[in-house]
Every structure is written in structure tokens, then in C-alpha cells.
Length: 100
Image (cartoon, rainbow, N blue to C red; front, side):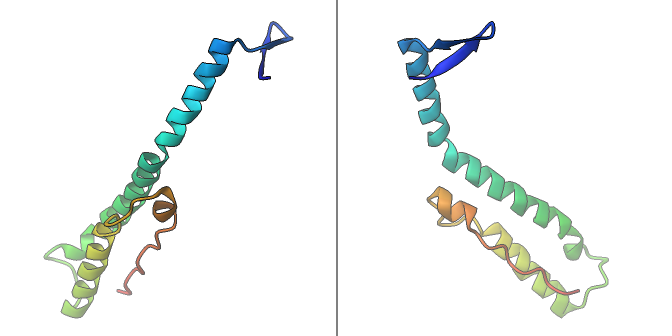
């Protein structure tokens, strides 16, 4: 049986409290995919923002380097395509950052 501490005393949870706790656990688990995808998108978006400079017109990158960065950024944008499980979202390998 589950317990809680009230005024320093261990007290058993009521049936309603147990039910509420179980419902919270189910709701938390149901949101696992959304949290995993939000985390992945956040990481991806930071990498995209950090590479924005590579696409500016006044960059000193060569055409080849700029193309490599464009491909990298495309790979980043496509990272979430086809991901349907928490495990897939948590195990995505980020593309390699180009040299240059």
C-alpha cells in the first residue's frame, strides 16, 4: 500500500489518492513521446541556429563548403521524419558538422 507523510506521521493513501496517483502516472507516460520529440526538436533547433551564419551572403565559405553546410542543415531539418516512438526519438544520431 502507498503512503504519505502527514505532520511527520506515515499515513496510508486513500483509494481516491491512489487512483489519482495512478492516473497521473498514466498521463505522464502518455506524454513521453511528445516530451522526447520536443527535446529532439530543441537540440535540432539549437544546431540550426548555430549554423545560420553559413547561409549568409557575406560568408567567407567556398561554394563547396556552403553546399556541405546546406546539406547538413537539410539533414537536421529532416531528423524528425518517420519517428514514431520514444525510443527512436531518444536514439537519433545527429549529422556530422561539416568542416569549414
